[in-house]
Amino acid sequence: MTQFRIQQDSPNPVTNIKREAGRRIVEVAGSITKQINLQARFSILQLKEMRGTITPPESAELDKIVNVWDWVQEMRDASKTLEVSKPADFKDKKHWPKPPAQAERPEKAQKKK
Image (cartoon, rainbow, N blue to C red; front, side, top):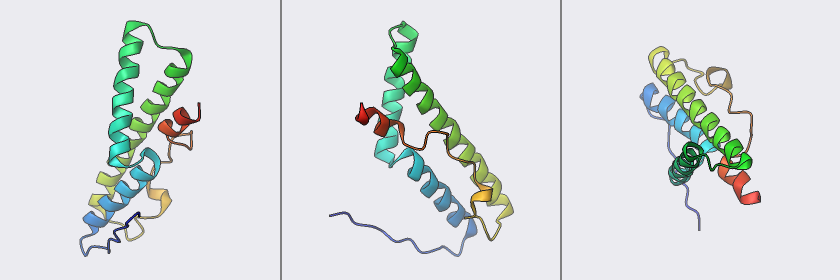
């Protein structure tokens, strides 16, 4: 049975902004466990690329993973900016970078193969 923790808004706006950034990252990159697995997959693919044994589909997968991590860094940068300005509407999508072009997480695309 899945359990959900409902987090109430904190009186500290910085905490709320960090939570929103985290929520958005998990929505695209997956849970922390999935993000760790994605990092492991990245390492494997990068090693294959360095050895010259990567296949074209694996190269495309590596590019998708890199795009996700680039976006995560953009999210962190946006969060830092919002933590300083503390806008009341920080949850509005106008404050956050658009997710990478591929809508699904790289590990989901891999499972479909």
